[in-house]
Structure formats: C-alpha cells, structure tokens
Length: 597
Image (cartoon, rainbow, N blue to C red; front, top):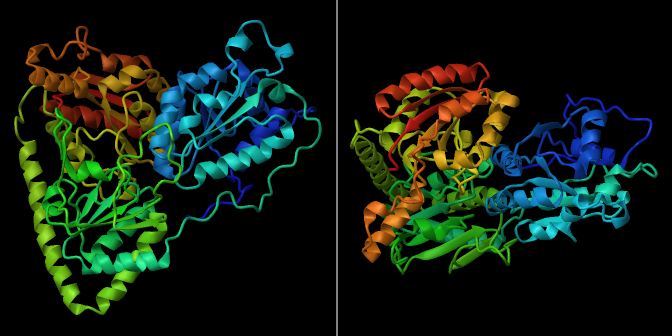
C-alpha cells in the first residue's frame, strides 16, 4: 500500500490560529496535522495542559480531541479505528499515572499488531520546577519503561529541536510491518516553554515509512512448485487480510491452486461462503493434508491441533509426512518479555516477506506452472469439487445445529446470532470483535473485507475497540453491530458516554449471559477433574443478584435502549426499532439475555 508523504493534509483542515507568542506545544499540533491524524482520543491531565491548550486554540481542535473517561477507552478507540482502516490515530495519556492505567490496552494493541501513536508527558524533569507531591509521585525516570516490553519504540526528546525527528521516527517505526504501538513522552516544562526560534519540520516530500518486505525470488519459486505438486494443500491465514487487498489476494491464490483455506481470524482473511473456505471444519481438510502453507500465521497451532482443556494435551490434526511452508515476518519485532509469538513452527521452507507482496507473486508463479501442466489443472478441478461439497456440508451442519433448543429461554447463542442476521443481512453491515463463540462466522455471510476487523481480545477491550470501528465507518453510513459481552462492558461502561457525546452511531446487541462464562467453564473442568461439586463452579463468576440493567445504563448516557429480552422471538422487532435510531445518528443498545453456547 502506497504511503502518503509527510505534509499531505486533509483538504478540510481548519486553519491554525497562531498566537503572538509561539509555544513549543504548537509544534506537536503541527506534527499531528502534518501526519494527518483525524482524531485524538485522550483522558485529560495537567502534565500536557500546554499541549491541550495548543490543540484547542492554536489547532482549533483539529485534529479533534475525543474525551474518554478512562485511558483504556482512548487507546482502544485508536485500536479499533486502525483495525478498520489501516490508518493510525494518536492518543494521549496523562503522565505516569495515565500511562499505567493504559498498560493493558497498549499490550493488546501490541499483540494485535495495531499501529497506535501514544503520547504522554512527564515531570517537569527539572525538579526545581515541580509542584509539591503531585509532580513527584506522577513522574518516573524514563517513563517509557512502563510499556517498553510491549511497544515497538519509545522516546523522550530533551529539546524542542529533537521533537520533529523523534515524531517522524516514531511514526515510521509504528507503521513499518509488523506494525505496533509507539510512545513519545514530552517534558512538561518543554511543552510549556516559548519556542526559542523557528523549529525545522520534517521534509514534506519525504516518505513516511519504508517499502514493504518482498520475498526471496528463488524461495518463492520453490514454494510455488511445492504448492502445485501437492495433492492436498491447505492454506492457513491469520494476518494476511489486514489490508483489504490481502483478502482479495488470498481469494486469488486459493482459487488459482484450488486449495482450501482455514481462516485463523486475526483479521478477516477470506469470504465465509467461498466454496474453498473450510474454517468451520478444518479437520476435514487437515487430516489428509500433504502441504500446509502458513500466510502470516503466528497462531498456526490452534487450528491444526485438538486440545484437551483439562490435561492441556495437544494432538496434531496434520499427518506427520506433510510439508510446511511459512511466509511471514517470522521473528521480527517479537518481545523478549511477552510470549505472544507462540510455539516455533518447524517448517520445510521459511520465507521472510510481507504476504501483501508475496501472495500475488505466488499466484502468478502457480498459474504459469499450472498452464504447463494440464493434468495438474484437471486434478485441481476435481479437488475443488470435493472441497466444495465439504464446505456445503459443513455449513449445512452448523445451520442444523443452530436450530437445537430453538425456543429455550434465555435464548441460545445460535438463536441470537440467527435473529440478528435476519435483520441486518440486507444492510451494509460491519460487526466488531465478538463473534458469539463462533456463531456469527457459522451463520452470517462475510462477503467483504471490511465486514469484520478480527477476533476479540481480552475482557475490557471490546467496547472500546467497537467504538473505534464504528468511528471508522461513521462517514460511510455503514451499520456497525457490536455483539457486546456483558462482562466486558462492566469494565468500561463510560465508553457508552463517548459514543453519545461524539455522535458515533452503532448498534450494541448485548451478549448477556450474566456471567464471566469463559472462566465458569474452566471451573467446571477443574471440578470434574478434582471431584469437587460442579454446581458450585459459578461462585465468583456470575454477574447476577443484582442483574445489571444494561438498557437503563445506556439510556442514562444518551443512548436509545431496550431490554432485557430473553425470548428469541422478541429480538427482531427490537433490533428494527434500534436500527431506525442508529440510522438517525444515535447509538442504540438492545439487551439480549442468552446462554453461553
């Protein structure tokens, strides 16, 4: 994807209004505008009061500040926006305490490979300028240490002359694949000082980031040869679809070689109803595979094995004789602290490359080989028909399973997914991160790359990320649907206020099982293993007695809301009423109470 040079601003940028005196904090505003940040979610703080003033008055609130009641929400809005658009936002946190509040959100952005330009302030480092107590307990020596193990880079420039180059390097590091969050921290006294002289800004014609990593040509030719010769190849994709053309490139590759695809789900990599999509029943194709091609697949092991959740024993679904090819960023930018890189993949061919570059090149090489081998093309046509039957059978089986306990109250998760799909399927819809334990993937038609930005992360991330996704699609008038877990919303209910304040229309459908049910299942496993009472496994897990009035909570923050609804037959009409409100520009919440699975 081509990168815009520094200095390319949006046409509708408001004009800055310079003061008689230029302040150092004005430079940060100029840089945010030069690098084209449209929004800056933040939680306010005195450490960057000078920057705040410059943004409001010098920059005329352009980029627009978005007030968030918690730092996690601010960073998660940037997280969701970047997942949906591929473009970053800046976010600002106050001093050491705000940074510490934000640690979890920064960590999840790091493991989700999301670019976020995090800014903060500290000090004053000159202790002679510090206020008693507050400035001392809110300041750390080298503040970036707090998140250094899970950011790509951090910096704390000392003088105003070093700020532009620090900003430019941070942006470049953040956007260079594999992407991730960066942190720049500014001394309070530096921000509040007058500019001593005109500050040299980055060259407007310079490229922001380097070009993408291309594959070794000989290695890619070998991969094409292996792929064309394989009788039963399988493609595993995790991050390949992080750009819209990655989704299209994978379709081209899969259809060129007639190979089934298993979408691991870090991003939406492949259309759900394509006949080569075997994500719902991976064992059907993995058990006979003679070649596995991993496409930016960091978490390759989960979908190629079965797990006994009690004993933790992992059993491979793939024959031992199968060959493995890995095309990815391999071990670039992994942390020595976080082990999010998974178990090493012992592959027969490893190619260090960006799949956005490698996949179309591989498709072209495979086409050339197949054009010279009519017998292999005919074999592939036969394989395509066989996989299509497996695909259709898998989807039919899941649709049949969805009808089980159809009239149960509270409704099953499958019924909830079905009812929502019936209402939104004719809309230009987007869903956020929760997939209702896989039921949206089983029942909905993910036919465009923007339909889903990727799987859910940990609790206390999803509502904030959903806001960012909805903000990204707001001007496109798409219907953004957040299947919102109850436990997650309990962490950050203030996110609802942000959506109302900044007029971010979205539909929240509560996935309300009145429990932290994922952990409830773990306690059930422990009880069965140890012979302790299974009926006591809910203790310390249930979000009940009192039940949370999510509709009342949403209404108190300016939303349209209905519920709770336990009967599936009542969901459709409630959703239609809510969607009318969303289309009028108002966020809406429907509290649906369901089973866990």
